[in-house]
Length: 163
Length: 233
Image (tube, rainbow over all chains, first blue to last red):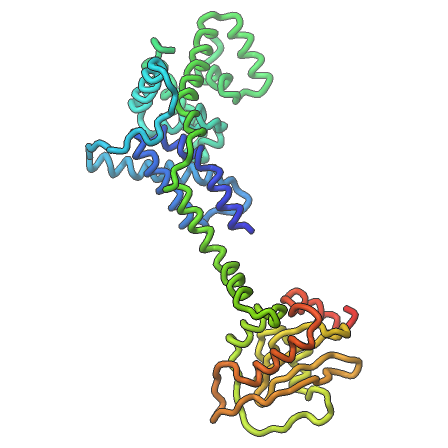
């Protein structure tokens, strides 16, 4: 059944969606909230997904749109509060050096504007082609590649010593 | 320098076609500064992978998987209902459990008065027309509704119907629809719809006794209708 394919496809995408959410959001709790909101939106909007088109692109688009909307309203609220359940989905690798390096990457990423960060994530982490990433974001390829270039330069400037 | 930062990045990202890629690689091989920049691009990708890829191996929290499971369950409600109908069916009613219960519950019979049984042993024109042309569950303008179709032990196609004055079973032979059994529809004042009555229940029970297999599904009915309901379709 088509619905079964939709649900199993969605379930299979969850690890990747969590990875993308972890890059977009500022902390693990926000990341899983974002992921959950994207899943719920997808289930409600299931009719809008066209059979034969890529489910992954559609899901990434839903998630980044939710995040951009959320980011706009967060800017307005300028809220600051700490989540208690932080650490729910932090990459688990042992060792002091690894932990230090991870937080360096996190801090460098958080300094990027959302548009540059999502371009970096889609191409360098999620492995999308420029054209695919541009389609997910909903911008021309040229816009995507220039955001990617600026984001990458900013990251390398911050991480230069560590790299 | 003939290699732009965009071109170098495109090389690292695998976005150049092989001719462009070969050209940029030649430039990189001849230029230490370019080689160093390319190495930095690759180092950045590796650092990002080291940070984010371990998330792929983590167990996915139930708060994410559960909504999908719940929705899938709702989608399959039809299957759940079908299973429940099978469960309720008596062993003797196994062939007709789904269709018979559905028909008995869903089909309200238009009641009337008078009218005698057919004398010839074959269905009259109104009933024959409905048996020839209607799929189960479709009501004709004459108030005749076919309840279900099945094949009897001799291979003939039989159909149970419910009409204004009687319910019955007829099987298609060379002459027409031979009536095997009829039961008077229970009488009510006026012509109102009501829950399927004892007449239909009796017909369902008779159908079970006559049938050699399960009731036809819609596709089987359509195929059988295309073959004029004849035995060797």
